Amino acid sequence: EVQLVQSGAEVKKPGESLKISCKGSGDTFTNYWIGWVRQMPGKGLEWMGIISPADSDIRYSPSFQGQVTFSADKSISTAYLQWSSLKASDTAMYYCARLGDGYNYGYWGQGTLVTVSS
Amino acid sequence: QSALTQPRSVSGSPGQSVTISCTGTSSDVGAYNYVSWYQQHPGKAPKLMIYDVTKRPSGVPDRFSGSKSGNTASLTISGLQAEDEADYYCCSYAGSYIVVFGGGTKLTVL
Image 1 (cartoon, rainbow over the protein chains, first blue to last red):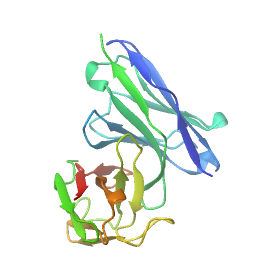
Image 2: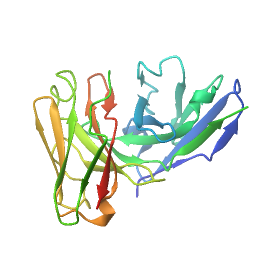
Image 3: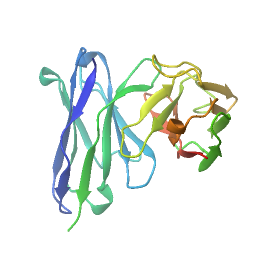
Image 4: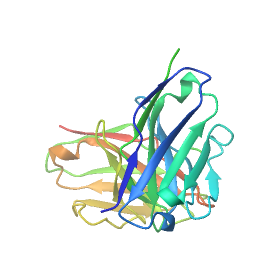
């Protein structure tokens, strides 16, 4: 069974850094791109970008370029999303999801809630 | 890329059919047959319901169907059931691995 398991909820202060994770299992992790999706409180889904765990090729949404950094460690089947300096507006649920054929996301992590507050 | 346009809300009674529209542009919905639809219940992760405009993943009831005409895609849910009450998001490929989501539609089963 394919599973994506994300790291737990985080509470941070503005200006702090953060790295959250998404660990895959049940399939060959390097065979599929991993996407990141933001959902701000009470709002819709926003596509942030995508990374290939095989070679760390990355595509950022223009809206998130320069705001976040994707990385992956294929040896432990894990993708990461990180911020160098959090803002209150980064408060949201963040999902990782596996890209299937046809640019759809058939498998999702459970989400990581990030709260940024002074 | 701008978000795809969906109605904020739709509603229907049990047993009825509802259709949710998703309007994009000739650069996304109109350009590719890679439209997908996701169901999200409160507090849960999204679930893929339709992909490649019309295909259903294994386990998704055939009450759910998708279509596309020009720059507008649609999700139709027939024989509405109480458990169908959720938020629904369309999503379209827009080239270069980029996808764009719709703003979401809240389905209420009356």
